[in-house]
Image (cartoon, rainbow, N blue to C red; front, top):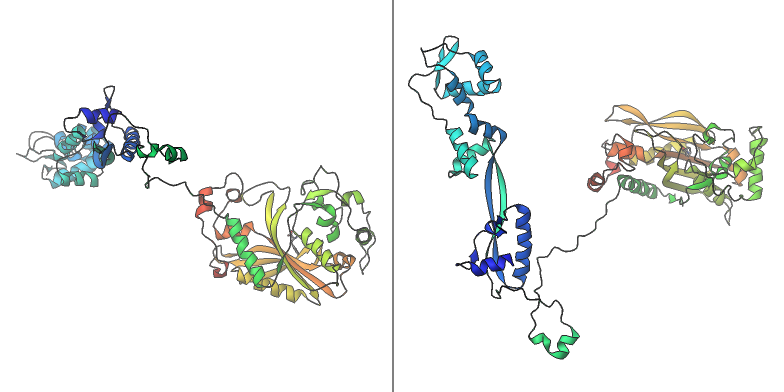
Length: 502
Ligand code: PHE
């Protein structure tokens, strides 16, 4: 209504600049107020009550340096001012000038004053050039800008901008004229043509609100894949390309039986302790596995079999039935191998993989979290060898960009032999450990009922490590958890492993 009454009382029927609108005697010139005015103008415009145009102007403010010069003069002027007229006093050198004017002013001012021929060399110092009365144009120009927020000369403004003595400020405001439907009262507009209006004929006299085609639509919600998911997808495709099938890993809670016992990990193994494994309190225990298989596992632990002497230590059912957060995805691989061994029609060769979350009770630091992802490949077939395992890993890792591999003997309770895999990292210039692998022990496989002559090979690695290398992330806590930078997640590009550029 302020806009409407101002227009109504204006002799020219217009408002030239909405920054001059006054509310209770105060002008509404600041950007927030102009935004509110724009919203009101849009609403009036949609009722054809006003027409308006946007005006963009620029004003100029002095920078700190600009203020200094406007107040005390340019550096060169102040140097000139400080010096005596030639022959009328003691000439001053740079050190003396610095004492008077501070360090900065003589540094720039002396050179400029000299170039302007305002001052001359006089012995070891400088004096004013005789007969010269310099005018400090820069300071005068700046004073004009200080008073008027602009300068009549475009080229002077450009020069002051270039010297960073002034800074521009943009203003958006509006000019307004009356529209066809101008009135000082705002009519309520209909937004809908209703059945009642049609029946009563009221639609004939009704004023309808215009469609606002310029209105911003609902913001579209766009998701983004987390870097770990992008790398996981790459790895999955590599496994699929190599003819592997994905294992169902959707169970974070496992029994100690499937996580440890079935893998021939001794019940006294240190990794089982509370410091390494998260145990579950409720429910207290797991369902019992198939009793025949359970019995074979307990026997191979206690007294051996299949050519093994076992651990010759008591095997506890209670320990076996404890529930825990799986510490490796090999728990799933083991359950799958048991299933394959006992499927209708008997064992068939299989190539399996999984990529999912595992949990370890570890102190968190830049490279360790209490939960991470494992990538695991398992191959079960007749008469395959360590050579096949190496070949599988060479093919797999070549597809992830790791072409130079080294294998080092290692130890796992469930594989023999076991190998750590190292890859040459061009960027870091060193061998880095990327995976753990091995041939599963007969003590693990034979109780499952796998036919003799079937060998099972496997390798496992973390998903976080290659992701951190690919995206050059040095702290794992910025990749997962509450410190994750969502903007980075949005912007990080997909990774193509095949290029293997790092
Ligand atoms: N489970 C092993 C680990 O946690 C990885 C592995 C999988 C080793 C398969 C050998 C065979 O590191």
